[in-house]
Length: 412
Image (cartoon, rainbow, N blue to C red; front, side, top):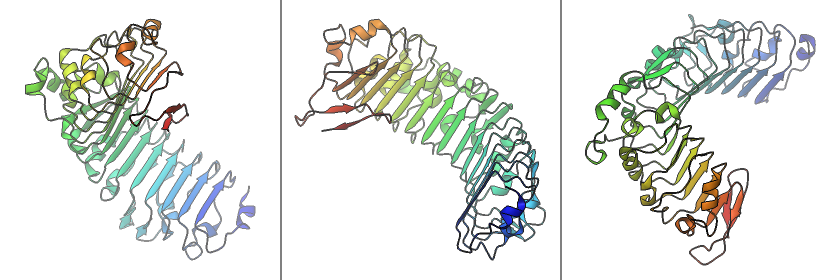
């Protein structure tokens, strides 16, 4: 589509959403920034406009709430061209997404704008490899969610986080820059995701993030290389019942891999009294220490536990039997796990799932197998996708398992 055609497609005044795909011009028609025409416009998406050389002054649209920029290959800078010439830029914008602006190297701070993204709450910058600078401090009063993925040259992040005092969600993925995050800058976080950040480390005590509700840490090999490693060493070998720190009291969802599992994670995380979901992936340990076993015993709110790709596991924590709230236990690709804990499974366990585990464990968990008496009370047992038996609910009604893609569910 060229500019002449787009110029003739001027929308009506009541439009609330505008999407433009595969536009081939180097600039847009003037009507796209006519604030009198777009008084009600709330969402704009510009995608695959590969020849576009300058962004239009969308910052002057009074009602714009959501802006999405995808695959704008020729845009080299986010600057005053986007903000416009008035004193206020994007007065109503709450969500801004930049995806794969492969030539965009800088996002400049405005010089003639007194109010700049005053209520922006969610910022997503995804797969912008060339981007080196973003004025994060300009969003300090309002930004609550920051999602970064594949921004390999963005160097100012660690310093900028100190300015984002309203941030409660931080998601950093596929980040190759050497960076050290200080927990003092993350005190108000409720949701933290760190995934595939090969040079990222954390300074400070993870347990100081007292508002944290969800935590995912995967493929961050140097995560504990700074002061948290010292904290771990000081606590190593202490009795959990006496010396275990307070812990992350609000955390209810935790996903970890070898980034934490190869450290003394029980000391780093502390007690987790509110934890409901725990997913452990890629552990290289063979057995659980006494301190780790006691740590699992403290997870009294845990409802779902998953061990995935823990190829060296030869045993599960013997303290699982004491967990009063555990309803689901999932074991995926635990090739060296030969048997279940001999002291049994939790009394109220509802589902046990085994997938691609050792054949010895599979045989032991079949009716009549050596471990069958440990799990005979479990209503739903799935082994490599096959349901083993059908049990009765406490009310005496038959319950069937629905093997849906979403994870299944129960019906009576």
